[in-house]
Image (cartoon, rainbow, N blue to C red; front, side, top):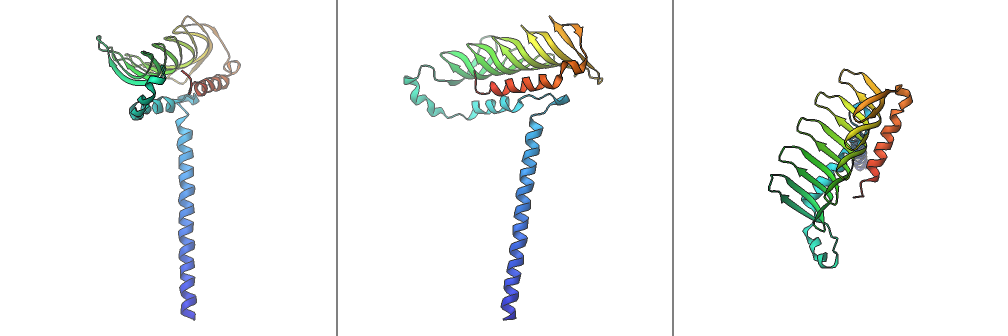
Length: 222
């Protein structure tokens, strides 16, 4: 009788130990995943931008099911993924609608510049990332081929401008983060700062929140 009791006691102890290990493993996994998510939505100086959106859409171009072509005859505006090489050496890989770049696509210029983001009627339109030949990187809003709206421009020397653009130029409120740690808040016009502002008056957190909301709202829009 004592042997049977001892046996079941041992079994119970083993079960409790295994259950504890399983629960600890699950809690650790949840904590790690939460930490990764928080890290993905933050960039330098706390400015948030949807980097994963561009990464996810890029992957879709590679893995989308080719069986969508079955409905092509019934849907004139069906999106297609194509790779198109131009005579000048430019390369486009992405979505087309009615023969035009519409949706998400990657355009690599022969000059080695690159755009990754949304298109509308053959023009960069929506949220995108543009890498320039000199190493500058712009992430933000485009309208009909030009930087328009809220964006972030990182210069080769690691200075960062966060604020508003109009027709490819800095226009409106913004902050210039210098690589030496200094901050320069103000109002820009035609790429030139025309007025200085107190950093508190600018309300940089509001600019960050507006930018993030616009990124989120553009996820499902062309």
